[in-house]
Image 1 (tube, rainbow, N blue to C red):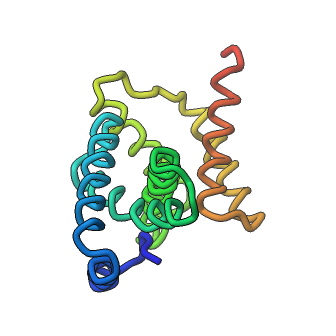
Image 2: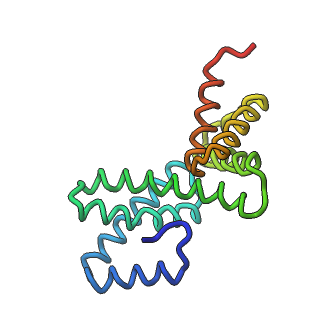
Image 3: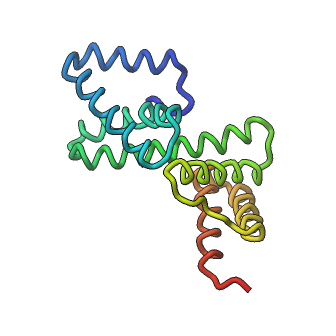
Length: 169
């Protein structure tokens, strides 16, 4: 399975396997799906290189879902959502791998969110420092509780949503 940890060699091997097994129809479908994923990513504000990664991360789950009988459009939406989460988690984990603390790793994801929003021409979210600090504390607590990186990020954003909905005093 190809994921954010796949090497270029593994990706190439997977593409070669698809090529051998499905031939020209798969190439055409692969390119059509790529165009759709890149268009979706551009509309959301992902950079070109990020969109390319979204394409790579979405392909295998997409084709597996279709093989399992899920409709093409539903499979595309689900696989694209999985790819977005994997890429976001990749940013978080990369910050940790570089020796950054969990607060900084979560703030890296917040910065990613702001960049994406700005690229699509919308005003970026402006979270107060106190809310970001609470979210970072929640991320740290989730990590201490054994939550996955994806769950830690979700916890941080849940705290942000909750606190942003409360009237500020």
